[in-house]
Image (cartoon, rainbow, N blue to C red):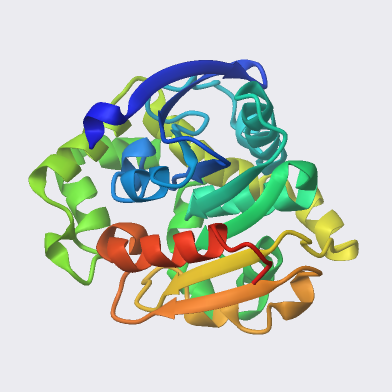
Length: 294
């Protein structure tokens, strides 16, 4: 199937994006998480391309996309503007957004700040930003699970820790977290390691976390003036996520003015789209291809 995938570059929001594209029809944009790149969607691209125009970009700072140097270049509002600009640059007015992990955070923010470009929204193992902010204030267990967010605030040290043993770090992040260890073969780990070793990529990836904690004003504004999401939304949540507790998904209905659906995936880790690709593909196709709102 990879022979039908095209690697392209496009300018949007002042930077150059690399992306992989396949298929024809309504646009589906796949937004990967930390510490990955477009390759995270290798199991979804062919399945979705049978029905849609699928674009899987390397997000700002990742893979072969430009890597602006400042922490402030990775604020969530800028990341959402990237998505909106990318949709327009691709020649579309709207897109279905599918995001995992940090890509999920970008998808949430795009639905909140750039709703005009979002047709349907699907998020995989990433909490709504208001739910996550509340948990960090009031849920000691989640605070402990999120230790790495605070470690990443340190200058230089997180990068040095990775560079001392990059193979071990990548293996721990993927195979170490997975319920099904065979999900990630040696070639998968090599791909993720090489992407992180591109000049500037590791610091850019960590800057997503640094920018978030340095931009409290945006979160306070959202808490003061919550914006219910109007786009039909699907949240897919693997239950054995060691970094994000299932309780982050409870009581979400008031966050939406449009249809909202939640699907749990048991016996599966944070890497749900790679560990359970057939199930995730089926859930996504059923949701995105439905003629009526869910």
